[in-house]
Image (cartoon, rainbow over all chains, first blue to last red; front, side, top):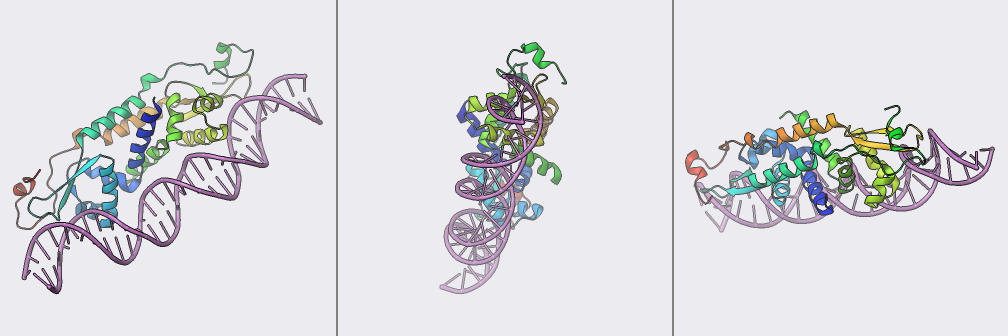
Length: 121
Length: 121
DNA sequence: GATATATTTCAATCTACATTGAATTATATT
DNA sequence: AATATAATTCAATGTAGATTGAAATATATC
């Protein structure tokens, strides 16, 4: 896997690795939410919710839309495309089919590869 | 999703979110590796490799086995069961099917739900 | 026993970043 | 214009954890 792809994946995982932020992402995975709803159900202060939503937005995982009649109300939702891309990246990276029998290129000298793998396994 | 499940998932993502550690996990996803191989290919010092491998082991994602003829050599590999469990947890959490049309329970007063969703969308 | 080898562990240092509390911004109502 | 509302941003603080360099551990060889 290319260095950049590893970096990108790590960056995305870093966006989701915080328990508070993941707890916010979860209800978003069910459907549209607004700050006050998230705050009420998760018992988190509004400004912290806002902060985490900003991080999720900057990562492209969610988007925001203001209410058409009162712009103070903002509704957040998952970005389907970003979600699917993330699923693909994770699926590829964690694909069990990648795993092949393999002999490390190092080890004790003068021992055959077959001997090496046997043992106290 | 249960609070504990969110916490557990966050913990696992935290294990994988570091670029260096993810860079180590990648070759492991291809097959057995030993410390010196990882160090050489990733240009990382041995002790740092060891540290990250410890974190991955403690998370249950990889296991270690010593060479049968010379115990100084240690081979690391992915734990298939843990890998599959992680894939399932991520797949469930990020399942697009979870997303349903939804009206937030808040918003401007005296505006019907239908009116609300229309607008500059 | 001395030396070499592969790895692991330890601890100091530094960076990243979540959280808290305050302030600000934008919008709506009176 | 004053007041209220919903959300956002700012900055200080404290914690978590990666990295570095040194030391320790375990094993093998002579």
